[in-house]
Length: 266
Length: 249
Image 1 (cartoon, rainbow over the protein chains, first blue to last red):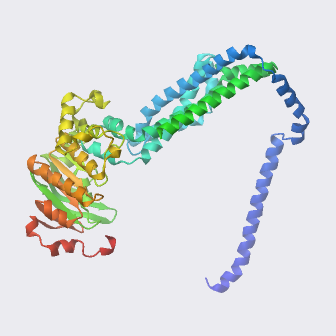
Image 2: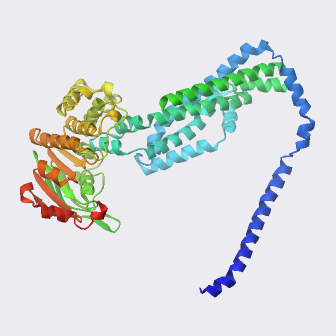
């Protein structure tokens, strides 16, 4: 192509480019307009009914301390749900990781299968599996434990496998050469190297699982979320005040402990 | 005890090993010299089958290493130990535990979940091996906090604890200061002679090679340029190995 051709072609191309840009921008605007209407967004309505929110908050004070005991019990149940779900998921993830990390997997088929399983577990939204398990095992916290376990395995095993894939393979090779078997290599070369990462991730996951357990309990899986849900349904604002305070303490406490524990590990 | 015959390995279109014959004999420290990229490390990795060679044979203590798989390969490999350039200790375990890991290959799984379950005989042997390399006082120290020279000596102790017949060392002194490098090489020479091990070391320092080797092998473009006792190799021959690529080094 000579320089004359370029001079002739260039204006045409820039015209095409601005057209494309316009179409793209138009599509984006249309997308937002549709979303706005679809979600029935009405900022004015929010401000007009703001006094309702203010009234609710006014009713929350003073909180009804009569439900303090039951709220704390419910908060502990929520914590227990998260604890058991996270722990079960941790154990299962440790079993899955040796299969799902490309650099130590015994076979490609096992790698693909475990990755597919983990992908599936991550795709099912927590509230869907939660509702399913409520039907399967009945309306109690155990349903929440199961739902949390399955989702957390999907997430944790994936993160674990990635941590293993990024680790220095030196010690692994060294032990493999010395005649150690797969499990021995995993126990003595892989685990010690990734242990801080693994622990940090599971503690972080525990922290977010407490919040997830709150949502699950609102669906009837027992716990603080269920009480909050009931108080709102029955307009018991003073009770809600107490429950929200307990909720705040639970979430902040778990977050605080999680931060300290992770700082200790690293 | 390690017999490599006609070993060939290519990466894509690049021929890295073009028919290599090497024998490692008991009681001998053999040093492989050669420029970067001449295939020295590839030889070591093929000899223990961390890499699959394209052609040739490797016999380790009488076992055809390329003809076995799975458990048989695992058992055969136990006769050889590797000491690498970057120290390959498990950093978060103690020096003594790292030495004991050398014995993993002979332990059944149920005894190997924790180093606490290791039989006494192996604990004793680990401590003995660690003492052999002069680091008994460091037994409880975390591997991550050892100096480079100490860590390489722990790796050698691990090889002793493994009761390997052959030690393959890939540039074991590359990142060490001269004094530590001397200590590591004299230790390797010492275990070769006194424990009757076959030791094959890839080195970059001709002067160290001359001082400690019983036999010198020169690597040039994936072939062996010479394989002789050190006094029979003159400096010009060694120079030639590093001839063309001064800029690379």
